[in-house]
Length: 324
Picture 1 (cartoon, rainbow, N blue to C red):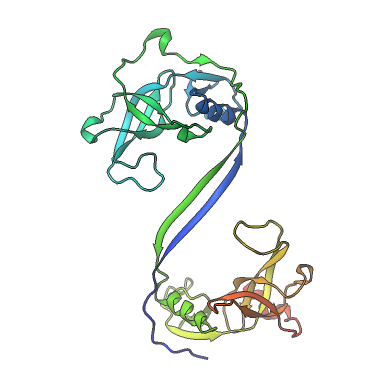
Picture 2: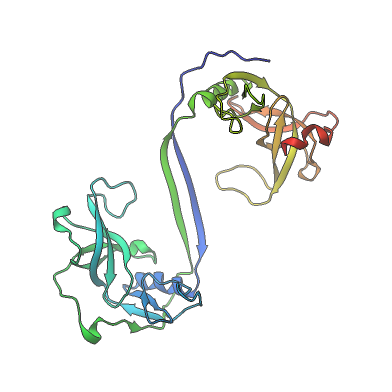
């Protein structure tokens, strides 16, 4: 069945992709972050004698585990820099600043952070800087609010060396949550705009390749195999066949679905590849390859909330094996 070919206006919408990653810390990283909370900068000494700041857990040359912690100074020297005239949200400073690599006194490697400076003319390679500590420190890299210019000269002799440290602090930091977030404006393009418009009418619209005749759902605008544009729009489904599936046992944040549940690849009738969707209306341990399903639309009608069994006999394996 061929759908109307007149395309709607191409859609655009703000999109946020975020993934807060929870990580437990080993003894080296735990000591480093706890030290920042206490106003102490720790590094680690490698088998070759180099002092690495921030510390690593394995020697970058020998790959051996290292735990020889040392304390370095909160002052250092800029080795290279780049000016940031337009800070983005959640960057260290909300006014223009320089990104700098700073080799702290006693260290052999540089640490990346922000330098608070009035303008690029005030920044130079070789300038002396010092840590500006955050007012409230929690055991995170943000405990270093930024670097700031420092008038003191670089230490010499024994004063320039790192001091051994046992890495022991009260109430050590043992885990962190790393916030990863990307904000951007997404445009689905001509093909997927038509696909989204079809969903609003409870239709699933794909596009057929004029060369190999495979129907892509969701459509991509071009056939990745033949490299030609796909312009012939085709309505597929609504029913389909489960090709493969997995059982989800971990509850996702902000997703009001009780575990366990099943997520499956579903080959809609007439489609040349499977799309994914949640299976409902059946116990999770009864979902199987070949199960015939149909969409249950969301309350707003904008997309299938999940797929449920149609009651038809299971599809023969040969009917969908090429779509696995």
